[in-house]
Image (cartoon, rainbow, N blue to C red; front, side):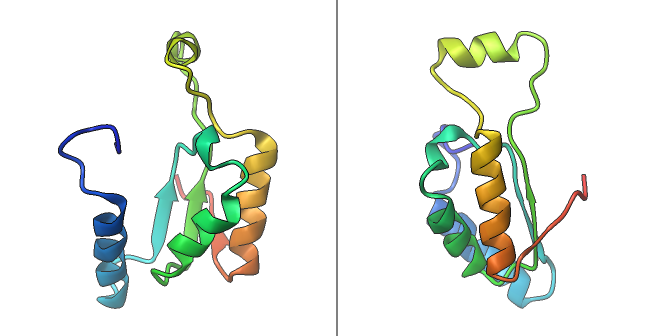
Length: 103
């Protein structure tokens, strides 16, 4: 969670992911839930993750549970749109990253 004060910065997370991939420990990213703030920046998002060398991407929006939608609305948060998710998946494919439904 990037809103958690103790969470590592994205640069540190990406560096750690790259180290894991180079060590053959990891080969995928679970990019869920994707939020609406990456819409219109989908290519930048995929380019950033592709630079780590990942092979697979699990991507999706928020899986709304009861009450979650109303809570998110109060916080002015929303999940990525279906169109935005389709762009993420298509950009990933263009860069040789295979979208997967692992989980």
